[in-house]
Every structure is written in structure tokens, then in C-alpha cells.
Image 1 (tube, chains in turn orange, red):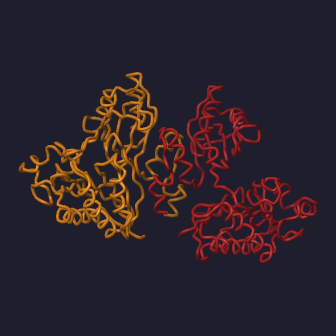
Image 2 (image 1 turned 60 degrees about the horizontal axis):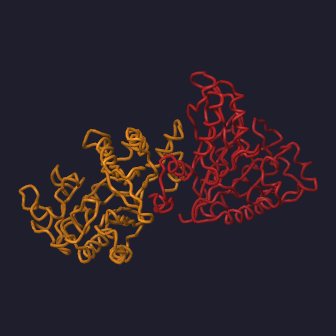
Length: 302
Length: 302
């Protein structure tokens, strides 16, 4: 495979295996596209799917996925911790190899137009594909969630980029766009007081004056196996080179001390570029003058 | 490239550029094999060459390299700090991708037989390829060096695995074998008392009852730029999956406390497989249930 584009859509279903499998099957059965990973969260009621391919393969798989999700997922019946506005909530495209961000912007427009046409789901272009500055940020687009979306798209500034001002009755609306690689990173706390996680999230996130390129929320999580409840700081690292994982981790630990709380463990959801992890190894192992590009063996093979 | 085997032979020439280039050219001109790196040390009078390829490409390049080195390097004229027994001293094969240690053992036997036949250099199989326990360790095979080798191979236990009991008059003998990737890792201390580094090295190394797969020595180092002196624990990690970098690092830090000494920084020398670093990131970031093979993006592209 020469050109590699990655897509990591989030679908609003994390509980019914048969629905999740039917959606994932759309990726599995598309030539030119390879399913890498999928991971469901019951309390978020959400599944992250990761696949790669060339532009044509990713286009086909992405459109098929939205059609299937719109058929099987009914947002009027959906509950879950994570904010959402559509059966497929968000569908980013990332340039991984032998392609540019512009190629991904172009792909997002082709896919967005086809989704509106073929699945009847209106599409907002976001991040690098955004047609106006306030649409770069997914959180701003999603504000009001599925329940408020029928009304929101009537507002002068919020007509979707494709599909017009009428939301899909059960599948809502969605965001499609090119963006840089992102690391989804959760830190679990040894407390069931969600307010601690919310307070820490507020301190560390860029929006409220914290670290650049960090989006964070506090969640109440129930362990699927043990039923034990705990609070979680759930983070999207939108640029792990600007703000590395270790910095976020150490800041969360430091802030947690105020409450006598510690981090019991962390999770990386889905895929993570090796550099995001190697940068943190360098910090903790105190490695001096390490040259990532020449000293990591795999960089010579890729 | 599907299957990837890496070889990192050491040749006994680090001073004459024309000889080094002639040897390295054997790798450059072999199809199915890619030269990654070569690095010469004048005081050791030795050059480390790194290349990768499929079994067939690495086999061809490796045999060609030994033939050329045996033609141009004369051990009867060789001086240098590093112990050596042959024009090519040692030639390890490492399984990097889509191959097993057994494949590398098999390759080492094919290459060893060809070297004896085509270059007239007797070969000891070492590490995973060793045909008896005392031949696993390169240091034991090399004991006596080039100067003592003609006599050593007459001893009952020291007939080479290929090529018989007659060393090459100028190119000596060599070791060929499969081994796991090795990480060269140094930890610098904020003391100029080399005894502290020696004491710590003794505690952590396998030979003296420390951690498995750790070789360690204490050195007196003088910074080339500032002239400042400090003690260093210099480590060869012979299996970074069995004994990860973080464990060595934390143990060195813990033992250093006895002397009121701290680690000021560490160094990774040469190439390092990403897994050696990712494993330590997992530990320090407390990542749970991380699946290296499926969650590190690059593993899907390699």
C-alpha cells in the first residue's frame, strides 16, 4: 500500500454487539481498506473504529459505514455519558503516508457530499476542512447534541455544509474532516467522586487556560466486569508533539494530590503513533540527545 | 519488504576508509538488502555495520562481506583496544518482522557453512545458534583472541562448527548466530567516584546475581566538551523484553540512593527497537491493557 489515509470514526453504539459488528463489517468487506481496530465503551455507549487505506478505499468504506449506522442506530433511544449528535458522530481523516493534509481535506468533501446524498445525514466539515473558523472545533459543532440539533441547524450560522437544514430523524447530523493524529488518553482515579475528575479536567484543558492542545472532561465510570465505580479524566491530545503524554500525566497526578487522590491506571483508546509513547519514554528514562528519526530502528524500515 | 532480518556484524577495521568502504559496498550492492548505518571507532579499530533484508538478501550480503573483509583485513597486522578474533569478528542475525528466532538460527547455519566454504574462515555458532552451552557466550569463544586461536581450535572442546581446525591465516575465525536485539544503555551519575558505578553495576548484572539479560560495568567518564568527570553505569540489555529499560533504570536509581547519588541522565547508543521504549512508556504512564502490536500505528504500516 503506497498512500495511507487513516480514518477513526466514532459511532454512537457501544452496547449492542450485533449492531457494532454490522457496522464494522462495512469496513471489513471494502477492498482497498483495512480494519485496524475497534473498541467499545459501554458507559459512553460509543465505539471507535480505526481503518486505513488509499483515498478510494477509505471513501467507500466510510460511506458504507454511515449508511449502515444510520439504519441501525436510533439517537432518539440513545443514552450514554459521551456527548453525541449522530449515529456516526464524527469521522476524521488523517494523512499517514505519501499523502498531504490537503488530500484529506479533499477526501472529506467527497465523502461528506456522498453521505448527505446517499445516507440522508447532513454533514458539517470540521478541523482542517472547516468552511468557517467556528466549525474547526468539534465541541462547538456538537453543542446542543442530537436533541438540540433540529433547532440548531435552523440558525443562520449553523446550516450544515452538505445536506441542508433538515436533520436525519434518527441518525442526526455528523462531522467529517481532516485532522492531525490525535491520542485518546484516559486517566482513572481512585475515587468515585466525579467532581474531582471534572475539576482536574478543567485545570488541564486548553479551553480553560490549561495545556495547549489538550481537551479534557471528567466522567463517572462503572467497571464493566467488577461494577466498581470510579472517576476518569478523559483526554483528547490533539497534538502530542506540542503537549506530550507525560506532561499531561504528571499534571493530572499533581492536581489529584490536592484531593488525596492518585491515578490507578491509564488507557490509550485505539491507535497511537509510536512517537507519542517514545517521547514519554525519553522523559521518564532521562535519555539525553536521543534522535527519534535515526535511533529508532523502525524509522529505517517504514 | 515483508520479512525483515537485521544483521550487525563487527569488522576489525576502523581506520582505513578505503577498506571500510570496500566492505560496506558489499552490502550496498546486494539486492534484497538495505544498508542502515555504519560507524567506525579508531581506537577500537573496528566498524559496526547494520543492514536489513529478507533471509536471501541478508545471506548474500553477509557472505560477500566476509569474503571481502578476509581479502583486505590482515589480523596479523591488527592492533586495537577491542578484543577480536577475525577480520569479521562477529555476525549476529536478529528477527525484526515476520520471522522467528528459529528462522535466524537456520540462516546463521546456512551463512556459517557458506563462509567456511567460500571464504575459508572457520565459524563458531553462538548465542541462540550455539551447538553447546559454552558457545552461547561470545566472550568465551573469543578468549585467546586471534593470536591464540590457531592453538585454541586444536583443543577437544573448541573445534569450530564449520571449516575444521585450521584458522584462516590472516582473517582468523568468526562467530555467527541468532540473538535478540540488544540495547546499549548508559546511566550517568552525579558523582566522580567510579566505585559507586562499579558497585551498582555488580548489583544489577546477571553474572553477579542481579537482573536477567543485563550486562553492566562501571566506567570513569570525562565529558568531551566540558572536561567534567563523572561515573557511568554502562549496560548491555541483551533481552529488553525479558528485562525492560524501566526496571534497570529504577533499580539503578534505588541502589544509587545508598550513596546519596542520583542519575543525571541516560544515553541510548545506536539503534533501539521501538518496543524497548514503548514498554517503558507503558510502565511510567501506567497504561493498562495496551496491545503493542495492534495499538501502535506503525505496526500496521511496517
